Length: 99
Length: 175
Image (cartoon, rainbow over all chains, first blue to last red; front, side, top):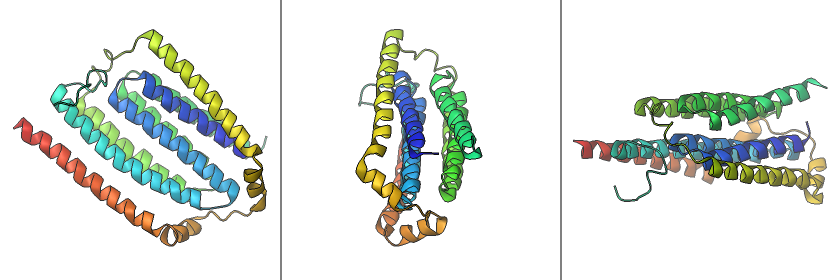
């Protein structure tokens, strides 16, 4: 398959992630959409790595995955502690920094 | 059509449908399960691109570890009843979707035009040989990218400590 096909698919997946962040108010689903966007970026990395015949792109994908894992762990811990305080994870209702 | 094209269309369609399902299901559990489907389809795309190691890591780290964490938190918080009242107004949703379509058009435009860029095109034809095996990744990771690799372990350590502190403080306040 040509490189364009993979890049277009990656752009579409990224857009779906962006739209998800915009239209959903559930913090966990917003997190999932961020994961979707990271994955779309990974797909573009691997596709370009293949077309250039370079393994560096795949090394970056591994770094992105490590950062994503750390981000999810921290984010979900924050969501759990916000839920303990406010009994909601709707991002429109959680709008003040003060506990 | 050769098998590679058929598989690309299959995996691409599954990942797109899964992604749309993630943002359209009301219940977070269904969204999480759709996200797992998307991750698996993307692992298939990585295999098609010859990146077998990345595909394996995708399944183990994303579809395995990260999604289990998501499902755990969703079940722990018992969120099924909460998601219904957090709906947005229809007008704002339509506006967001229009912005999204514009972004998609921009993305596709850039993707198509980046290939026509002479710098990228010459690089593409210059190296046709595929040297992106697991061996090459390991070689790069432990030579050229050794410092970033070690910094990654610090990031994971920071995340570990951060999570413990966050959850522990929450418990103390409760008592």
